[in-house]
Image (tube, rainbow over all chains, first blue to last red; front, side):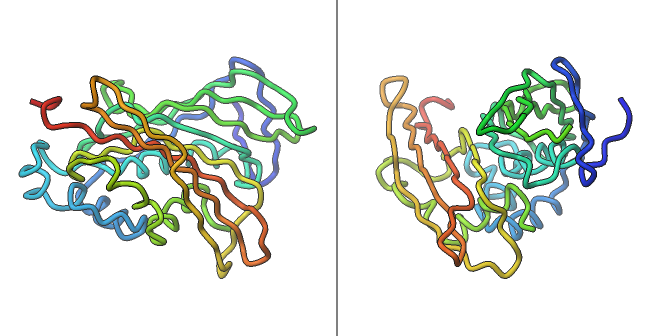
Length: 144
Length: 100
């Protein structure tokens, strides 16, 4: 597909179109420490390997909201933040440190909602082996 | 403009997300974020003064109580009293027996 400029609001999808993939990572310990600060989630499971191992985990693992934030990059590469009406995700599996996240999506439907033309998107964030970390759905306003 | 998922950071900062965790009866180390949704009504901006209100809207159990779920609804309003973001979070606490 041709490049989309979210600021120009020129995305004109059809049902079945795939959205451009966004890849983030590998997720480092440093990333987790910085995200703890940014998210106000200072839970030691995400930043202290000793604590994580004492809790039975193999190592520190990513905040679910970090992966959701990555998935959000796939949305905001297409549409302005104010054009996201709603979205929800289900956290499918733990994202271990060093994982690379690949975010993808597909246009499932074009609908009218509250008098606006909207795209319904199926979204997924998977690791480098294709295991699902997050799956979800978003409704975004179209201007085309 | 405040990024779309940043509302959750504000919710944690306000500590309203801690609401109801005691009712999950479990070890916080085994707490997981199960689902998260946002509905947006107005954008939040830098320097906005945000009022955050949370309530526990549902609690249920699966696997004979070994997995206990809590659903929270949180609303974020700006300094004009305008509803900006609605956030729905599902948390699950797993009993250690499940991970043995």
